[in-house]
Length: 135
Image (cartoon, rainbow, N blue to C red; front, side, top):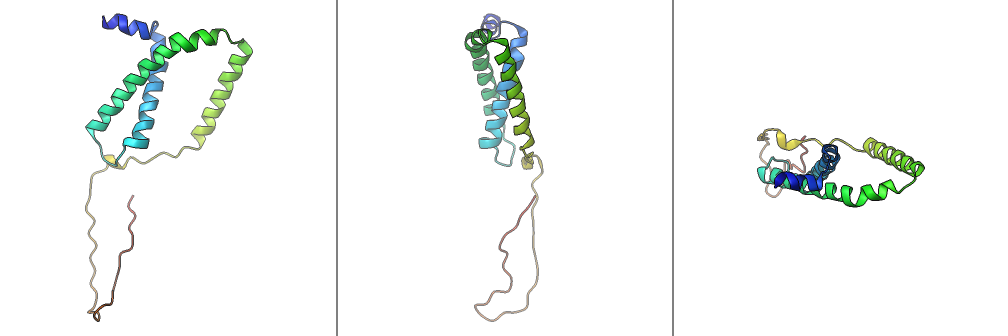
């Protein structure tokens, strides 16, 4: 039963890999944009895996039942232009992406700041820590 269900979404084995790439990319985007909290969580990993599977199967179905039949009817010149423009815009987007540091992989550490100040008159401040940036 599972094999026939899998064949319904992916009639050929080569149809599975592009759909998996789209599903994985979607899950990584959602994870980094909405679920990342600077610590590793098995719950968020499970969400990402569910998103990967769901989008993979939806993409496989759409590709075989909607996109592929329409793609065959498009003239060859327009198909080549579409693929070229898609690759060009993908490269432009990749150039503008900064790699986000994965802080949640690093171990937690404690920061202790200590200093001594002389006795101050009542109501005056000696030192104030306004901000700290780690990373």
